[in-house]
Image (cartoon, rainbow, N blue to C red; front, side, top):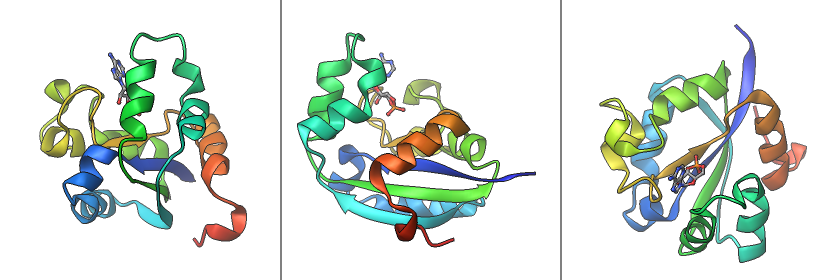
Length: 140
Ligand code: CMP
């Protein structure tokens, strides 16, 4: 299996409820290594740029407002098949559909305040990691 990296964001609903450590524990138990991590307050321009792929979607404005409503924790996760492994650990976007034991099933409030983001492909992971981290910040 290939060692991969993926970008993860612990969202404002989770930082507000002091869940960073609980979420990191699920990620680490799933075999993912946190090789970079930073707590940041996104600007509106950063949130819009990060989610630009969704800009025509009806939920775009609300999503940007939510993502700038509090601090987030951006992180790089490393492991075998990290992209898929992280998506499995997160569970479905809508917490009502997320498998039990997943981060979203345990912690998410609703489809918007869904506690975590994870890259959806290796290609997007590379783009999303570069959005937040320089190579020198990532310590494998
Ligand atoms: P995320 O994985 O960060 O990618 C886009 C985000 O948009 C998603 O998680 C949700 O937080 C948010 N979102 C809000 N409403 C919807 C919706 N109806 N469908 C998909 N994503 C939504």
